[in-house]
Length: 333
Image (cartoon, rainbow, N blue to C red; front, side):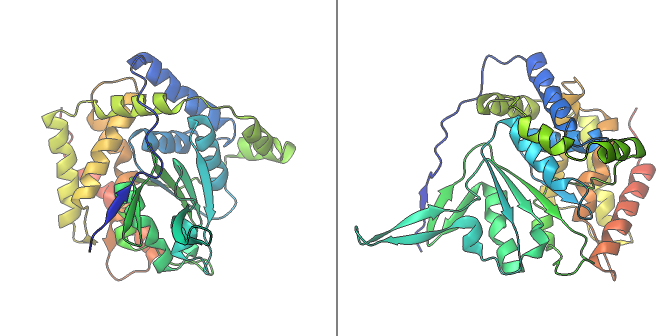
């Protein structure tokens, strides 16, 4: 069957070739600073999400409701200067509610495509595991290839494109566990966690402050600047020694007695992209073993399957297995 490819959102922006490495790094830090004024007391989570976007990946925010997952995603979209759409997933949502639909034009007697919310640079998939598996699968092509196919026509998504998805624990009512194939398309997975005592005390005193700050956030980056930073991140070097260390951890996930499904080659690529972004934000043009150690759990745990347990327990045991692997694999000197 013939497929026609259309560029629904043409690439109007070229990377900013005038942006120096130090300027790019400073802008990335400014993004983290700006988002941290909205999500109090969790700078590491903010940095992880920003690094994921700079590595051209998608991030999964997993936690209980009410800890700031949606606020974090909105703040990131604002500071990156990206076009933004929020999709609130529900049990009755259809794939066409995400991707778009062909609409009959009665005057022309022909169909035209009405784009769905996925046709933006940064998409917040809120409570993605409340949708049915059929609707969840509608995200797969978009996340893997930056395109969607509807009625034999493939539409290219704008660049850059990224998904920030939030997920409630699967033990909560009305939540479906995400399939392994979809989890594998998220470059990173993190828990926002509860705020510290000081941050929560500040929220008690000024409960409306984060939302008012969010509404006042100004873009830190332009699209050409974001594309330029992503290009610089991709140039960060991974030496043979560090690559061997990373691969040793990957291979250990495939041979660990408690892990039924180890890391895929897609996961290996995601790991390499993410450590480059982490090193870039640390001011280095090369990856060190500490970058690999720092990110192993966030990149690998959500990809692992531990046999004989439900999804919630699986994530806990998978994280423990990754920590064990990292502690046992020799660190290069």
